[in-house]
Image (cartoon, rainbow, N blue to C red):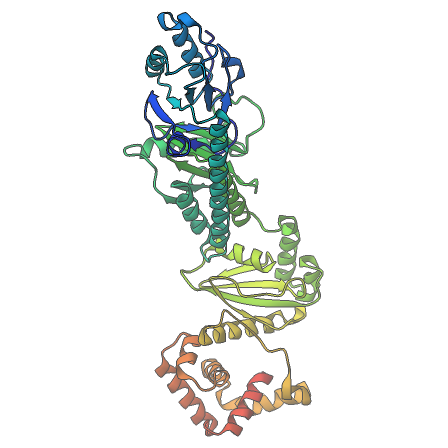
Length: 504
């Protein structure tokens, strides 16, 4: 008998043998072998060959009516050799049809199946082998549909997680939840950046954790390649099993050395697809967005630091003539660099600045209209030329304050000039300086007055927009009214002040 490894089973969803036995229409009954609920079959195959080994791929429910059994088989070693060959070929179970050849299942066959641990199923006379095969394919179709639905739901959950303010931890949490194990992101130096979930199995944490980190080194560009891999190219993924835990590692597509590691107690057919989706998303989140423009951005930054005007460096960043500035603040915890980069990618620009709780993004106008982003509150400026980036930055900050105050996901700075369009800009600016002169030396009063008027005199919303107490708003507005020597309850006064503030 050749010493052969158990062959790989076909790439189809497995069917639990217990599910097939539970079909009342078939009337199947297991009469020998282990009653393990984890026993699965991958298809049904009928054969009357005395040695079915050359015709099996592994994972089959082999169906036979015993036509091949000689009359004197019960007193010899026939069944021992027959069952051992099925087991060596990787057969999952044996189905024996009662009638038309045999009235009962041979006792020696039952004993051989018990000896070799092969489940033996009795097929009653009323059940045809084609009916059994059809039932197997029906159960496989159901399993395939269930698995496809599971993978689809996982893809949607992972995509939603990638859009959150904390995308990397959110994606890892979803991966851990969907695979029933632990997901970890490893840095180029091998250190663990973030992780979610628990290592399956009691008492295996240290061993499995070390094995997963080692597997990550196998797929990391410039890593050791792992034992037995020789000097060939670094694989993009690798798998292993340690202490009964299934491990998998995926090199992220950035080429920077980040690796995704997944450890789970089971390895279902869709797990590889789910983990691959997670790896793609993490590649986008950890990679340099539009890396081909990195040199141009570096050149633009250097030129601006050396005194070049914004309009001179703008062509290096994007050929678009107009730009908008977006200020965004997450609805949850403060953003990190990865979250800021993910937001920039969603808005279509790699020009991102993380400043405390606020992320600023410079977006070319006309390429993609900035829209509301899940988990973020955004303020969008009007479209401006590069020379007015500073003005747009102020507009976006004010729009963000208003968005937070009115609890809208996105607020845009009004680009309609209104009455200001009827007055020449220099005259409007001179008028504004004259009207606001008493408070011009105090930017806090000016900004509070502007926000308060934009929010129709709401103390609470102004407090939210400025991140101060409502009493502070009252005090500032009262102080501004006193310095301006005017009645802010008068709508004409408010209109004139608003016109002056808009002109600054």
